[in-house]
Image (cartoon, rainbow, N blue to C red; front, side, top):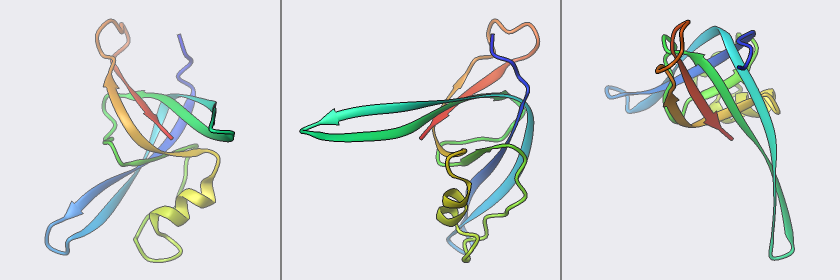
Length: 121
């Protein structure tokens, strides 16, 4: 079983229907697991390399596909105005940050409470 000793920061994205703009809520989530892998692919003579991430977080954390997650406790807020745009924050935190692509509920079978498996690139 993976150790749940890491802290991560999640920026949850939601749409403000009044302003028609994205708004971000930052939350620091302790008791997580963080794994990073390097994915290599060669196609038509071109090599591609990317990082793939898998984290386990408590089910109490607010997370959705499209959110941003970073290893460690981060204080930056995403405001949508430079230098605090999503892209600029993500660039500044490389290689310890990813965009959430999938979420799986792993609550069944855990004796000490359920977890969500969050994956992304």
